[in-house]
Amino acid sequence: MTNREQPGRLESHTIQPIGAEHRHGTARDLFTVWFGSNITLLALVTGALATTVYGLSFTWAVISILFGNLFGGVFMALHSAQGATLGVPQMVQTRGQFGSLGALLVVGLVIVMYVGFFASNVVLGGQALHLMMPRMTDTSGIFWVGALSLVAAILGHDLIHAYARVLTYASGAVLALAFFWIVFIHGLPPDFMSRNSVSVPGVLSTVSIAALWQIAYAPYVSDYSRYMPIDTGARTAFWASYWGCTLGSIVPMILGAVVGICAKSGDVIESLAGLTGSISSLVLIVFAIGLAAANAMNLYCCTLSTLTFGQTLVAAWSPKAFTRALVALILFGLSLILALLTKGSFLVDYTDFILLLLYVLVPWTAINLVDYYLIQHGRYDVQSFMSPNGGIYGRVNVAAVACYVIGIAVQLPFMSTTLYTGFVAAALKGSDLSWIVGLAITAPIYYLWARRKVVRMQGYRDEQHGNTGAPGRISNGEPRLKS
Image 1 (cartoon, one colour):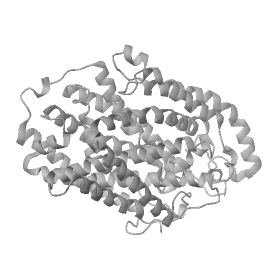
Image 2 (tube, one colour):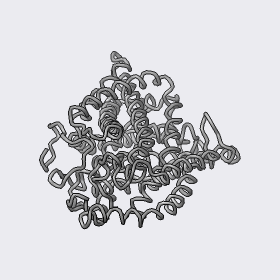
Image 3 (tube, helix red, strand yellow):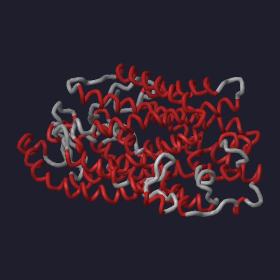
Image 4 (tube, one colour):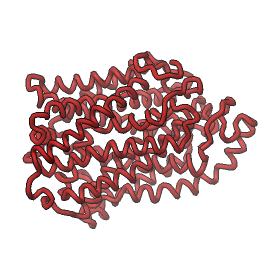
């Protein structure tokens, strides 16, 4: 690859650091990759949970969706700024907090997350295509939506950015058209604003799923900002990612809340088709294609994370493009199997799935952000990320692993799911505050624990690398952006 975008060419890099000569793109590319990839049926279904599963009125659904996305987007964007600085995938950078082997705990969970999101997306895409083209079974639709995602995941980074750029305009226009049609052509029910009510558990649950929608992108974002030119800057990367992801999520979620209130059945996709009338084919097909683009991101990141997992175990291995393609194909097959097994109980399974993600991702994001911004101040030895013994970060950082386990454990009393409800959540009538508690406890504990190691690690860095390991530079002497 050259330093220009080449969406039709197979990406040669996998998990290796991206040098300055291969950097390309602009802040607008970060905005469109997150805006375009979020306007999907899955975002719409997530917003519909507010007015269907949680029973909120439209006003309170909008307030909860706004607050959750705007708050959660801060965490997502802080991770995105790391990619533009360090030039490595997010799960490779996690070795800087957990150590090379310790990071496998998080990498393994993230792989499961990607597979789950991929399966969720293709189920919705398959259902949408079947609804518009009855001769195509939902199983066939699932396969074709997945296959389109596979092509982009194999060709890699630049094609995914190109996909999202087109969808920013195409899906954005169709989303606006759908709103106009439902409100002014079909018309809202006379009692639309008075339907449903407000409840504390409903508001907190909606805020939680909206915040998680953003936090769940934390393992993704560096993968798509790591090619940004070094002079892009952390601040620019932050705001481009933040507004792209929050605006791209909020609008379809609000549409989902509208559909949920108007729905005469429990099927959100079928209700959307009914509300959009003669333009329903256009709406569902464009949104289904949008799912394919979003799923390409899931599969691409899942592949990079799987390669990271394997390279940790076989440190001398440096996976190339062919290996990435082969792993993507295998993961595609596994995801299709999961999609076919869960398509009959999608909404319940999806709700439980995103709540589970909340519990395991929150402690990781707290540790990662505290370490990057408050402990290391963006100064990492990238060469150590790829070292067989973990370099200056070692094989296992006991502090990070212990804090991660603590961060999950302290959430248990506050969890509220169909499988388990903690005693505090039960006392609060099902309100789930676990993610707030996880952030509030994990972050300060890790900060206090990790600060004790800073002086020792800085001394080791200076001893091993001299001036080339100084803050703001990669250990091989290549300039790197200071945070």
